[in-house]
Image (cartoon, rainbow, N blue to C red):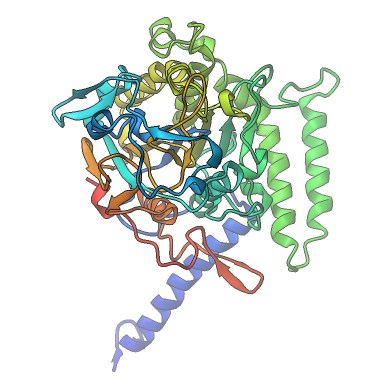
Amino acid sequence: MKDTKLGYSRRDMLARAGGGFGMLAFASMLEAAKNPFAPKVPMQVGGKAKSIIWIFTNGGPSQVDTWDYKPELAKRDGQTLEGFDPKTGFFPGSVGGLMKSPFGFKQYGVSGTWCSDLFPKTAMHVDKMCFIHSCWTGSNNHSPALFMMNTGTTRMGYPCVGSWVNYGLGSESDSLPSFVVMSDPMNRGLPKGSAANWGAGFLPSVYQGTWLKPSGAPIDNLTVPASLTPQRQRAQLDLMARLNRQSLTGSAIESELNARIESFELAYRMQTAAPEAFALKDEPEHIQKLYGVNEKHCGHFAKQCLTARRMVERGVRFIQIYSGGMENQQSWDGHKDILGNHSGFAAESDQPVAALISDLEQRGLLDQTLIIWGGEFGRLPIAQKGAQPGRDHNPHAFTVWMCGGGVKGGYHHGETDEIGFKAVIDKVSVHDLHATILAAAGLDHERLTFKFQGLDQRLTGVENPKVVKQVFA
């Protein structure tokens, strides 16, 4: 039946409306192909996190010495753990008895959360923090465990979490990278696996992380040579873009060429925006003091956390900060002297992380920024023999906490056994954790896919992982 005023039937109207919606979606796809950084609409309602800051405690901090209080360890200190497989850790010949934590624990906040003396400042925020105590992974070796935590697989060459988020949501900034990585000071090195931990894998290379150098200029070539005027530089970019676009033929390489064109344009815009974004000296004195920028014991990490806040303010989507470098005692990898190792790295990070939470909150940014703290695995509740005993690797249990970004404050999810050896209640795999992080950003881990080698690849694999819905407010 036709509407005499409009001249077409209701069926025609629905068909035309459907076609219109299809054209809107197609237009969006064309814009994404033209600019891979273009902001995209989240896939699902409820994701509050517009930005993610991941404090990656490289080396594997001990859950029983940080956030997973186990008084039973003190009662059984020195006892042999019956049935323990010495190959669980990395040094089967150095297995000792159960070892109590050398750190004291106190309860904080309305939630009564037990926290180690390692984190007196961060502990003041426990009622904003959400703890997942039942995480587990499949490798007891750093490199594959790092790849697993960063990319969802133990092999290098796969896209990391930051790249997937970048691919799924695009960027809110047109003049800064959407995904930046800050590493430990160079005298301690990069994490094992180096840049493969923040690579884009089979995703277009434009989505890989931009590493900020820990000393000197954070990004190369930010300063324009005096001989290159803005007019000449603009003319060079326009010529390169014109020549590249002549090669666009609708083939499989088109997206890569578009990404290359956009990367040149982004680099050009960064030469103006990035120096201002990295100018920590412009921060008020009380903010620099809050983070500890000028404190010898934590200054380098304070600068990175303050930079992260400035990145969030400017629309950067994903920021990853590595605490700890390459080799054992140069990271949270406390094989020897767990007391000295963890005391040192906690002292470097406690004040800056607490300041980051406070600063984001007072600026009204915490609700839309998800902070994650955690490493690639945990540590054993038994001693690793040595002059100053440490703890070996433990893939069976570790704690990750989150803050902001819509998570439930003062909440504890899952449990380990009475000595902190294995996750036993509400276990959370790395894929579950990834699905939850994506959900916090409004991304459906099942729908966030990329066609590669004939398959729809995704961060969370095919093992039917679950979003930990209980952690959301």
